[in-house]
Length: 143
Image (cartoon, rainbow, N blue to C red):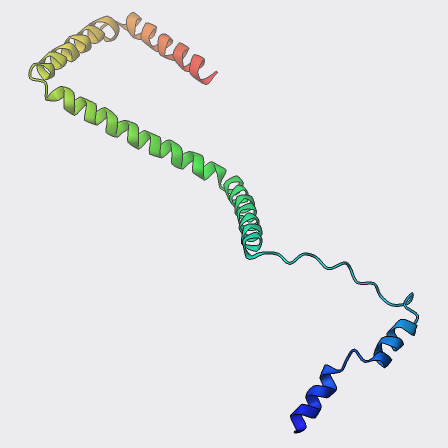
């Protein structure tokens, strides 16, 4: 019985007296509320949150990359050198498996080494010529 009275008391909020009191009041001094917005669907909410996440992740990644740019460049060069060395070693191993390639290449290496020694290292004048040529190449590379 008591709960019915309480329910009637709370349910009767739109009585004529309450409406008249609101209509008669001075509403120019009351704070205005912004118009109600359309409620956001769950899909729109998830989409907005994902967009914010990706934008923040992009900004954080950019800051991180800028802070450690030099380290990344060094690691990239090191990785490129390791990959290049592995490819060259695999290529040389494949050439070594060809039956006559290894002795022919060794013979070419011995012949070229012999020619180089006789051409540049036997006389002092040719050694100076070789040093001048090496210095010239250094200047071209280093500027």
